[in-house]
Length: 360
Image (cartoon, rainbow, N blue to C red; front, top):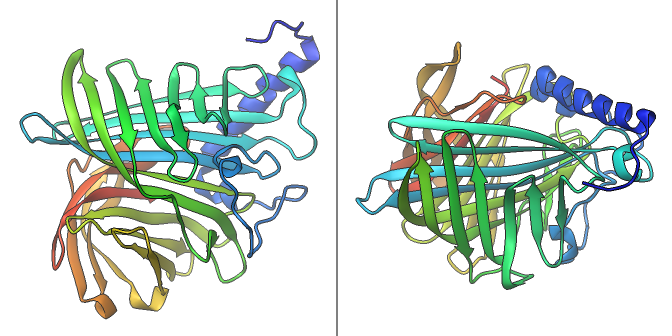
């Protein structure tokens, strides 16, 4: 922590910013549609620059570094993990120093097996060394949770990395390798979220190979598998009539990758979008009119009904699969509560992936 003197006013400002973050969590995902006057706007035509864009963009209101991993232990039993660091600006304008800094950091970590789901959440302030991200050398951290570049990571691939986090009853430590560059989602990184212009800047690294140790109740297990990281930043990612999203990242057994989401609207309509990513890292956008996402089975979790099984079809690609969760109780009971867990799928294609359900 910074050794500078902390005034009463600066300390009070820090507590107020944390309270703002928690209040935003209580508002749910509808809060992401609030107007963002004074913050930077997402517009088409951005030229992405690495490593700079691996780092933070404090002129935008919200941002995240989001990793999920589909793993197996030595016996072949499947499991999954999540590591997410969120940045939210409490107000626009020049960045304050020390405890006057307006950036609030929040992180989620989780592990999931068929028989259990564990998660943890932590908050920190910007400006005092408790949390942050540096682009080069790459390092994203909050307290002792960290995603860190190892052995001079390649700016194009954002690899190799080490990853670690721990909750009261779980922990994990992984190494992540990738040999293909990150993939710009949407239209060259401009990811449109509504017909009214809401959008984010969005890229992914879907080609991580993961290896390490996962421990539950102090029982460590060697694990390996595939991981996917999403990077997004925006100032108003949802429109006022949008309540949440259903999002999937899929690792096909062929080596191809598929990202799909649909944003739900109050009138019952949806705004779907997808990207098909080849084994070589080449992508092809999938129009919403070509995507069929149909809930097939519900589970009652945390007092609400959630669509945890999905039939997904893309007729133009002769693609039709049924997705099933490893554990239907993968509820993240955090400030921003949501469902997030590993899935498997079969049909015309098979593989594993992750499903996220927000706003329910």
